[in-house]
Image 1 (spheres, rainbow, N blue to C red):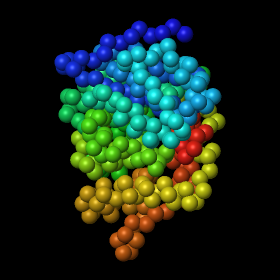
Image 2 (cartoon, rainbow, N blue to C red):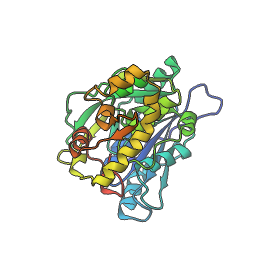
Image 3 (cartoon, helix red, strand yellow):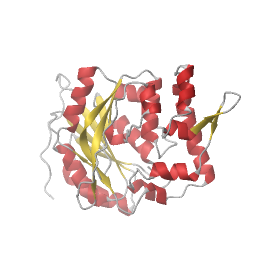
Image 4 (cartoon, one colour):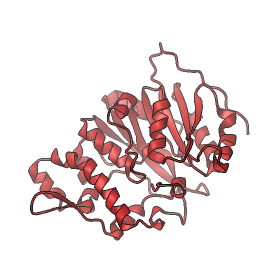
Length: 313
């Protein structure tokens, strides 16, 4: 494996913002080189990569992963290993803690950025004065074949767009101002499923200026025969997930005008409408049939984290 050419560290005097790309890693070390090369190839001149290994320090997977990334390490490609497996949300949050960039974005260890991903999304944020930008994406399989159709993000500017629309804000679609990410608490570390949507929800609650990009900016790997729906959730686990989701979304629902809160209950296939019903006393109640969880899961590809503790994106 030929080491990549070192990137020039960002100068504090530069007018070009530094963007930090956070890559959580768990298993599947054979994919990480391609993912990392797709970040190194970015056309934006100021990019740093933060690799956070969640295999557990000293494990066979951690050693294999470090061997793959070691030739690339330098001032703008940094590596950190979690002492033990802590989950995808905590691992991404750890990456942001280590980041120096004014903006942060994310990449899963088996996906691939298009070379203009960072530049295009950053320009979108600067042009529209956004706190958070959500991009669209293509899909491909483990053989490298394109899997149509592309996932085109709908317009995202307000609470209604999230609650009534059908956005797909997987973590790699997100670019966010680092200070804002930290101010709203980052990813919910109690979740390894829908944690990315909940981050966007919380950003809106805190008054974020948000926008979406209809052009695909990265390639999302779909693993045939390995889907989240294959992981069976116990009823108490479904209870726990939806309790957290309800808590995250409650304030966003309260920001809706009364007529739109009523309309939310009638809209399908809105995730919010599937997840809640309104009781006669005006309090939110949860319903969580297994078929709802499984149906939502059909759109989520298998992820290396499914093999780890409390992971299930």
